[in-house]
Length: 120
Image (tube, rainbow, N blue to C red; front, side, top):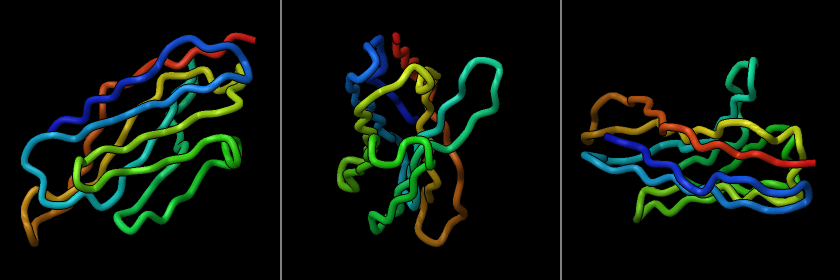
């Protein structure tokens, strides 16, 4: 299983970016998908998570500005980021909790990370 993230880049404060992540390989069901960020010198932290039934939760710092969504048929998760701030600058990683076979164990997978830079 691989997670391929895309969509990072450089944007001015107040602008928008959309990150996308696609899971590929032998997948029975993806239970949860999420985006994390890791700023320089800091630990990786949760930005937003979405479950198989589209329940979502967000970090307080992004509520009202970011929206996570997923397409179960395509095994993708997107993060729409609006009103970006300089403090949103980080490497963003997609993450998935998934099962490769019916009745099997749940495994975690990480994407390779995509850099988001917000200039003030």
